[in-house]
Each structure stands twice: as C-alpha cells, then as structure tokens.
Amino acid sequence: MATQTIDELPTPALILDRAILRRNLKRMSDRLRDAGVMLRPHLKTAKSIQVGRMAVEGHDGRITVSTLAEARYFAGGGFKDILYGVGIVPAKLPAVTELRRQGVNLRVVTDNLAVAKAIAAAATAGDTFSVFIEIDSGAGRAGLPFPELPGLLDIAKVLHAAPGIELAGVMTHAGHSYHQSTPDGIAAVAEQERRAIVGAAEALRAAGIPCPIVSGGSTPTAMHSRDFTGITEMRPGVYVFNDLDQEFIGSCGAGDLALSVLASVIGHYPHRNQLLVDAGALALSKDISAQEFQPKVGFGTLAGASAAGLAVVDCSQEHGFVGSDAPLPYAGLPVGARVRILPNHACITAAAYDRYYVVDSDLDGGKSVIDVYDRINGW
Image (cartoon, rainbow, N blue to C red; front, side):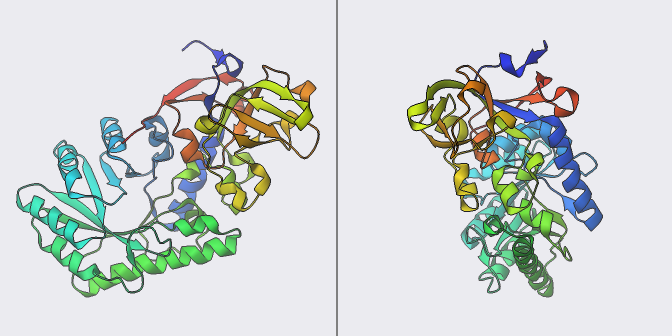
C-alpha cells in the first residue's frame, strides 16, 4: 500500500496502534503461560484475522467467537479450534455442522436440557458436536447458577450418552468483574469464577462423566486472578486493545489503549465552551461503561497533550460535543484539526467499522498508516 499519514485519512476512522497491541498481547500471553493455563482469546473484540493470528502466536491456536459470521470468517483464515461462546439454538445446528464437516472443530455452548436433547438428536442422525455446558459464576447472564447447578447432571448425561458428541467441558464468563474498581475486588470475583467452574467440573467427574476443559473468561479476572488451580483455559477478549473501562478498573494502564477513533473538528462554540467533531454516536457508540468509575469521560476522552482534559460530553448520530471544565484550547484545535478519541468500550466502538488503519507509535509516533486490517461484522 502507498504510504499514508493519518492526516490523509477520511474521518471518522478507526486507528489501531500495533506497538501497543503487541505489548498487550505479550502481557496476557506471558501471564497465562506462566500460570500453566491455555489461552483461548475471545476475538469478538478484534474480529480480525490479522489480530487473531498475532493473539495465538506461541499458543495452540484455539479461539473464541461470538457469532457464526465470525466462526466462518476465522475458519476461512485457517483457525481450526473455535468455541462459539453464545448459547446455541437448534436452528443454528446446521450451520455448525457445515463448518465441522469442513474440518473445523466448532464447539458450542448450552445450559438447557431441551437444547442438549436437540444436539443429541442431531448427533444420532450422523452429525458430530463438541459441547460446553455454561455455568453462571455470578454475572447473572447465562449459565447454570453455582452452587446449585440445577440440571447439570441431566444435561451432561444426555450429551455424554449420545454418539458423536464430545462433552468438552464447562465454561463461564465472569462479567461482573467489570464492575469492580480494585485489584482485590476483581481477584475476589476471579476466585468466585474459579470455584464455580472447578466445582461444576468436579461434580461431573464424581458422576463418572469426563470434563477435560475448564474454561474461564474475562480480561479483568485473567489479569488479576491469584489462583488458577483447576482452570485449564482462559478466554479474555478486550485485553487486545483495552479501553477506558479497563484502564479505570486497573486491568491496564493509560498507555495500554491501542484503539482510538480519528475525528475532525467541525465547529467552535465558545459561548458554551464546546467544539464539535464528526464522530458521534455511530462512530463512538453510546456505551458509557467507564462513567461508572470516572463520570467526566463522557463518551470518550481525547488523546494527546493538546487535548488534555477534553471529553466527548454528548453526542448525536454524527456529531460529538467536546467539552471540558476548563476553557477549551480553540487556537490549538482549529476547524479541520484531527483528534484521537479513546473509547469507553473498545468492542462496541470498533463494531461500527469495517477496517483498522494500523499505525505504530514505536516507529514514528504513530503518524503513518503502515497497514490496513480487515474485520468481520454482522451475524
């Protein structure tokens, strides 16, 4: 590709700093390797084959996805061990079978006896499946609640008895770790996560049912867990990019945010101490998760010395309203100036874009576009 600077890009644009990305990947890779835990990165954040290949370097290539579109995309990129981490429904089993017949070990998740029976019926008809049973370790989203684990053995017995089904193990997502604001708080959630899935695995084994994989998953618990005993793999996702939410809960530092939205200043409004940028709700998302810890971050904060203390305080569909408690530096940010906005939630912000413009802050401060990575969107 012809060399391009970020000042030549159309705005809004999604910017990925490769230097920070690599550091983030290495940090998680080293941490889990040192703990003796396999890494199954959740690529719902990146949705990019290029990033996915970087994420599994030095590991065995297993990944997690959140849509069948992602599963097809990554399978087309050569990934062979893919966990589809959203509860399966019978209507989607033919799509799973199609990929499995192509040599992809696409694994599915359920916490429902009727679905387990539907999977068993499909297996009896000649298809094969690899299935995880989902456990609720406290997040209250999906899974069999621990410690009661209602129906665990009933589901497991149906899957274990059916020909052509591998009961791969148990899995959970400790999403409530995102609401903790201290390392100790996150570590407590991580221990809750560990006890839930290890307890479920032990219950299966006590009933004579193998449970080879015990799978935990969230960036905060992967970063702050103090005991991985009994866990065989972790599925962190947002760690690849990080975001303001992860910074404020202590999963990363201020210099570890690899993703930003490039926007142009399109108007000055000194009577209300605001300026406008051409990145609004569609370009940034209206996710306000980081406001739980820092209310003044708005819908994202502006990066760089010239924009210190500035945030997108409001947004409409295509307009971002930038404000601050201090007078805005209009002279330093004239109409047409480019700004970089750090997202509250990288996964949601990135979903609006079909590509990453890749820069490298270790090469020239991140001024030149050195590559373009594609992404898969949709379902």
